[in-house]
View: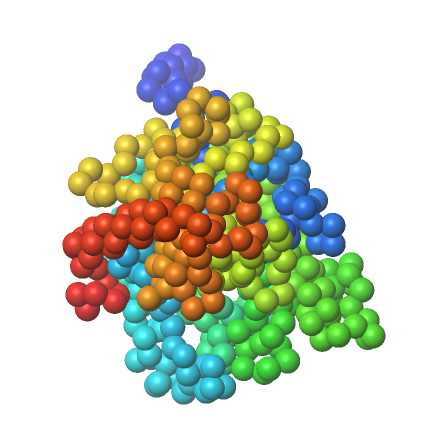
Length: 465
Ligand SMILES: [Ca+2]
């Protein structure tokens, strides 16, 4: 007995102190929606779309109204915030995809295996946020749309994540998990069809819940890139133009006849947003169950502006355009006690800030020798400093936009002109004739930025390939 007592004493002596959740490094939960409109949350003004859980998140945190992504469509936007670098710097500055689907072309497995969509990915030299946090001892899980390449070397498990369930191209059918007929779901490094038929938002939610169950007593980084409410990637034209939701959520919105096709599709889109909102709520509830919400930084935003079925009011334009509707997205940040609750910040901030912010929140140094294009935005949200950001550049092939201070200049096919955003958020009043000096200054700075990007070390998949 004495021997046993001595043994217990020794065990207690050398047992690591049990850290209370509040004493542990902060967890990071990064939730990204896909093509959600700037106006498609109650907290951003929607009266038709029901998003009770995101609205509650906004009440518990800070709503960012001048938050931009680095590219106006999926793939480069995601690579940019996961690496903390401009698309032109990290090499993923265009979509990794095929265009043949636009002709209704169905790939044979042999064709797909050698297609750009299948073989390209973000440069393997790039350091992902998950690499940094994993090295710092974090459990890292990714559940949803990876969109960073499908070959093994590009997959999340080779990018610092310990666990992954999701798809790796840019869009799928929500139920079959096929992209234009090609099975696209992965579990870890392996393709899987075992969950075919189950609504994918539900699957991503359940994997996220399991991850929290398994890792709630250690620091973790949970990345949940939903594909809702992106259009369904199905060759069937009827399905392809729609956003899919479960019958239960469709029933919450009236989808009966008598409405135009577009109106009906808008209802499907709204149902998918509400279903995603409910999934987010369940995940946030799980943090509460383990009493770790206070020690968890939650960041939510859409990967780019809303597409055809979305509502981007009061912004002009949509996904893939250089208008504000393409790049300015709804964003909510919650970290109880660290980020003010119930506040709105119109500070000029971008998704390039996410990487340094997550590093700061977790006490993890930024990798040395890598150029980052953002900064820790926590002091801005805490009201300690003005946003250090004074400029942002966007380029998609030969279409460009630049914002410096409150001025924005755009040169693209659909959008052109000089706009003063504080009094013209809808970009209606082109001031380029009135302020040619301003246009010149913005163009000049843009040219300098382009030169800097051109001079950076070439990165795959589009340069040095
Ligand atoms: Ca998107």
